[in-house]
Figure 1: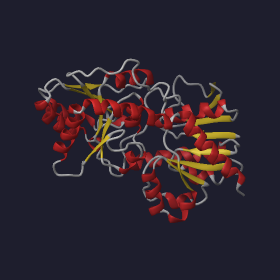
Figure 2 (figure 1 turned 90 degrees about the horizontal axis):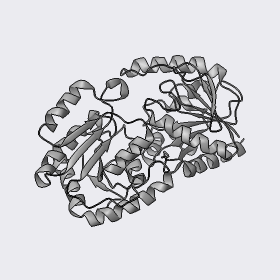
Figure 3 (figure 1 turned 90 degrees about the vertical axis):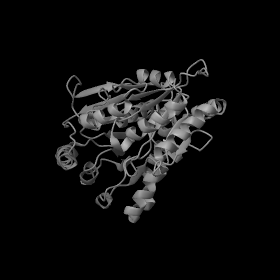
Figure 4 (figure 1 turned 180 degrees about the vertical axis):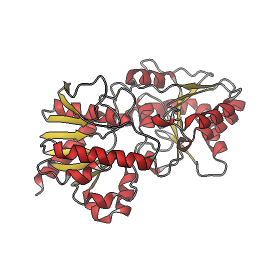
Length: 375
């Protein structure tokens, strides 16, 4: 097959300044190429990256693109401009995978670009009626599948759930088992933004520290608004909450091997997201699991695609008026019952293997083959 993958106008591929979605598509594309398919990634141009390039069997065509802002309406206009200038030059293909808002609308106007598959990695916001001619919606979780079905019933027959992949070669447990030490580190990786619940995590950690004075908290992720963070005002609020607590704020780590090391150096992972309609899958908890960490997560449906309560992770009630105490109690239970938690870590790492690049690539290829057999 000739498979083209359009990653949108915002971030470069290979990812050199963040862009988890682009990093995942690069990994899956390389599996497609290794299986003998002709694969091209259509991505934004970026200083230092040539317009045409081939890496690990995958061809890259870089054209156009914009820096993403914090204004969704401005970004929709930018994305519209990108789509209008990109669709006339889309190369021929059997399959065209798109991770973008406007491009699927216009791609259907260009003949012979192939069967169009939208990588539905975000909750719908009323736009799916625009995609009437798209052949498949590849929802990254059952929560996204249900949301698309509710918004656009006519598309139900075209929805397939194909989870986000992770790099299970880079993200793996430490060679030696984690020791049962008192000075444990709880880790958060992700955007430092109010919807991720970092303020709630700090409130819970303040309670937990009274019970376990030697426990530490490390928070890794972007703070700047143009990188998806909550900005300086939110960060100042967090630093005030963290005063006199063993809390470390670290810059985002974009290099996967270094990020994997950070996971392996920790003892427990916490992802207290409050984004009811913003959390579509949750790659960070899954990468943590692959690295041998038990995740403690909020009670969002998307996490249930790979976390089973008491088996591969823990949930806490983030909707409660007493959410900080609920989170603190859950973390406390995981620490007190460390032998159980250690056993769960092994099961979590095993579960994460189901989401490798190879296995998710297999799911996509099976879907592509099915699409091509249909008239």
